[in-house]
Length: 221
Image (tube, rainbow, N blue to C red; front, top):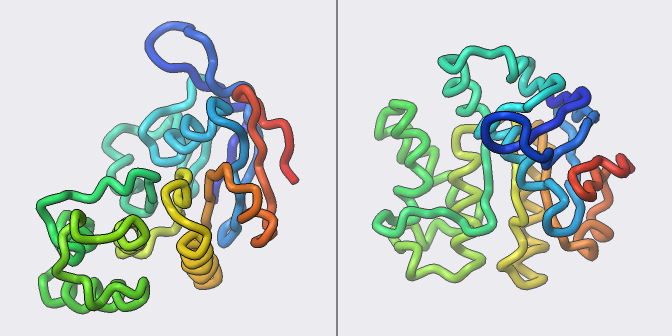
């Protein structure tokens, strides 16, 4: 599902300072991994590679069976549609209802409105927000906004789900509910990788960990 082989990365043209150094690991299909490390460790840069927002500066990166460094640009949009991303700051569109935020990926993919209505309704029920379908983001609590963001990330049934500090704005109860949703998705076959600072949550939900420090993978536990 995901394979890093001596991957290095720097931003900008030329040979600037590396933000990732010779990273090597793999995540099998259906795996669950925690991505750990302090601020500045390289977690967000690693997630940028996995969302295809950047390419490695060296080494080999395979995502969903595709060599990202060698793939033509025209092949990336189709690959991105198989990847879901949950951001810490939600990134909901303020002028759209919860329903329409979740429906957006399906509309961009050209799905019919009848199918969209059924799929989005089912997804909002799954995250416990069926009664809030018409609410706009400003009318939702932080936990509700996060669940809308998760529903949007998984509505197209991604093969790979990534989350960048998804519990950073949530209290303990909301964070636990979020992790149960991720675990359920993983049980249904989605490969999941969650970046977090929350070591308490990691202890409550044991899984293999990838630990970064200064752009280096210092442990794969």
